[in-house]
Amino acid sequence: MKYKNIPEMFFTQAQKYGDKAVQQYKKDGKWLNISWNQVKAIVEQVGLGLVELGLQQKDNVCLLSENRPEWAHADLGIISAGGVNVPIYATNTPQQVEYIINDAQAKFLFVSNKLQLDKVMKIRPNVPNLKKVIILDALDANPAPDFIITLDELKKMGKPEKDKKVLDSRYQAVQPDDIITIIYTSGTTGDPKGAMLTHKNILSNCEDIETYVPLNDTFVALSFLPLSHVFERTAGYYGMMFYGATIAYAESIDKIVDNMAEVRPLIMVSVPRVYEKMYARIIEGVESGSPSKKKIFYWAVATGKQTIPYRLAGKALPIGLSIKYALAKKLVFSKIKAILGGRLLFFVSGGAPLAKDLGEFFFAADVAIIEGYGLTETSPILTVNPYGKMKFGTAGKPIPNCEIKIAPDGEILARGPMIMKGYFKKPEATAEAIEKDGYFHTGDIGFLDNEGYLHITDRKKDLIVTAGGKNIAPQPIENSLKMNRYVEQVAMIGDKKPYCVALVVPKFEAIESYAKQNNISYKSRKELVNHPRIVELIQNAIDSINATLAKYETIKKIKILPNEFTQETGELTPTLKVKRRVIMEKYKDIIEELYAQ
Image (cartoon, rainbow, N blue to C red):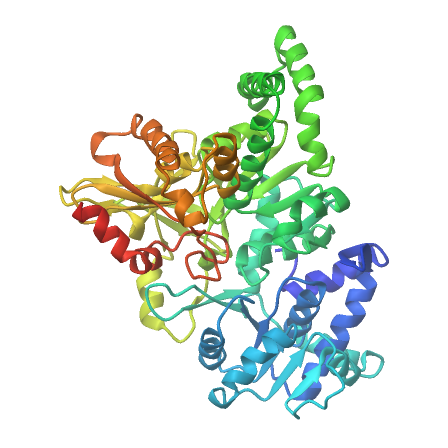
């Protein structure tokens, strides 16, 4: 490998790029730059401050924060001092925070702000190993307890001009197989497990993705997925630094479109849920327009889709199609690209399968989405759709040094330098997940086609086996339904049942607009979703998908819900995937009614 560990990579790049911007953030309405040199100086102060506090090589340090430049400063400081970063999602409850701190036996904890600090104060008596809490924000005038210091105070403790050799010796002693991070899984079926990832795991991913994805130091990436998740950590943070790119931190998920217009990124790492929302917003805008506007838009999309086989094969478009596509780009697609900042080369998608129709739509509109596949335990990247040779509906080809094979029951197994060291303090779970020959059980079902592209049908644990013994993969059906302009989220149910049912969350903006246009009065969303016209609208979407399915796969009954599935209410993971078992428990009375009728 090019580097022995992540700190070596960072300090080498900082030396190379100096005053070039490596981070951007928005403050008081303006985007500000932080250079490589500035970040390097901060990291040295943080690392040496931790050494001064008593951090030992290989100590675990927790980091509880939303995305912000200081997340990276704390992380790089921890690992440069030889420590292990144990990230905690900012959305976690105090009880979840307590579990991770205790399980990781962390002596130190970084928190972002008072909101996160309050969580820690609630559990303070229950985390006896915790010696210091470092808050990234400034504290108010009230004196803080002795165990709390600010990031600025920590930085003052570190004196690079005096002790830089101490930090150099710390990070230079870190070996490729040493642990860089312990990332805890969501734990929906039991206590969370901490996946131990090494410097080699992540660096191998950073190096190997270059085969399929063009990356260089001119890139500006917009970052908004949680840095606590390995997908953003590797692809949107370490990977960007590895190639000398600039990382701009989005203000929030709600400000993504605004921030794209301001930052004008060349790349953005995201999950299918965000692309679904973008698509829905585009379609809603078109449908609310004039008949001529709608006609031009759908003509442009149809024209764009005609170009896909030629463009993916690297062939010139026939002259007639070339003229039509140039017109489609001018009239329609240029407006979509302008919304995305005007410079976007491609999106990167992961965390869940991307609907085939969604990939084709954006590529038709001259916006490529490069879909990949992986898990927390695989650092995360296993497969990537090669840029310019995407195969929509697939997760792409195995990256270099990754071996993929399919078990007799259809489960995808993977082996290579990206596979985790194991689960922290859980040797039995590790042995269950990783075979003696090094193959990791992904828990996903799929197959490799004759061109070597991986197709994922579903999560093994999510497969529905009906009372009649039929196997159904719900994700592809749910993804198809979400392409409907009136459907926001779907949870398909049917395991050990005589037939399948579904809980459907509508696109409220779309059905409220429909209600207004059709003089449907209502006093609440609950009343709206139960209105016969709205039920008919959603049922039509179900019927159109049912027509494409085998009889045993069809959705026989539905219930439209008046509220979205969210992280805060526990139904979604941090990468916005549905937690099927949580939903089944939360809505068990409704589900029982669907089967009792």
